[in-house]
Image (cartoon, rainbow, N blue to C red; front, side):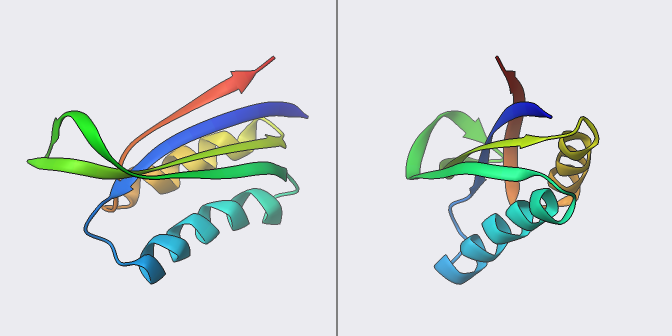
Length: 94
């Protein structure tokens, strides 16, 4: 199992229930595929460095997890098709 870290930015326009639902959805993708979530750090609403789709703010979340190599690919796929995810970045931790 490799260790990964993913940072993603959700739309600031989401209400708390929808935001928590998306975070839970991404966590369940990892756990249902046999991965382990080490930590989920919700940074909260932050001003973006530059506008993305005319939006100035975003909700930042950092999640660290251990899994096989196929799970980050599935996470990326799910985030690409979700309109509420503005940006994301998956990195391998040493």
